Length: 337
Image 1 (tube, one colour):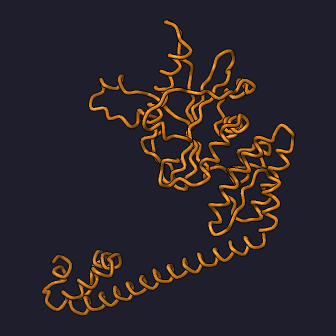
Image 2 (tube, helix red, strand yellow; image 1 turned 90 degrees about the vertical axis):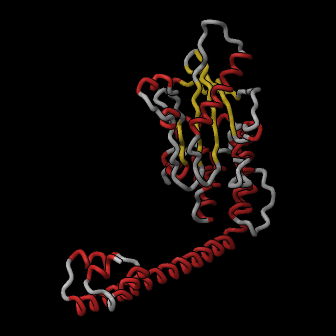
């Protein structure tokens, strides 16, 4: 989120992407996939400018509200894009608040008459963090029920969660026309070759004359991504995918070597950490074996329980038991003090 310390410079690029109806359509068709998606008339998809505002919502530049015809009726889409590195456990409560404010705005400005029903709202949370999302998707699971009779007063409202990290790597191959799938794939690219390949796929996909605005939005988003990915590089402002493609071609060799070097450094660090842990464990096992030998020499054969306790004990505990051997009258005094 832009008002969150974990936000990144390409958050604004995401907002720009979701100002395009093609991206919203791709989200619904490719990732939300409601069973009634075929009944949506995407030709009627239009942004909805809500006038409600709260202290929280004034800072929420990453929300997008659309409406589209589902049969003869309007369906409202409330899209929230979360850039946090960890999930918002109480998201369902926020969703309920935002939907209530949206409904109040619709009542004031439609205006609805007595007896008319409010339109349905589909809240979608697009989560781009690396950790698992743990927050309940329904507000009912956040509310305590001290008595069964109170159940009827517990709100029942869910949101649809789309976690980018769970999207299959092959998604873009299975859905080549889904622009959002390629964009998300770019964010998870593991090499400059893969990134370059995805950019060229997007160039071909967005080559039609009427795709200019969306191509610019994708290029701006990708420009922000590159600045985050390569913080030490001077990334120029890129306005279309041709410029992105040319820049990637020029930088491909340098960045490939940079990523390789980063991988080697990470591997060395991981190897040192693993070696340290392995050495500590081997030392603990030797100390456990020595303690067993001393105990059996002093008190005779030990029980299976004693063996299990010693094998599972940390080094500090083994040392404490070892110090008690000379003063203890029985083996139980070694373990019980």
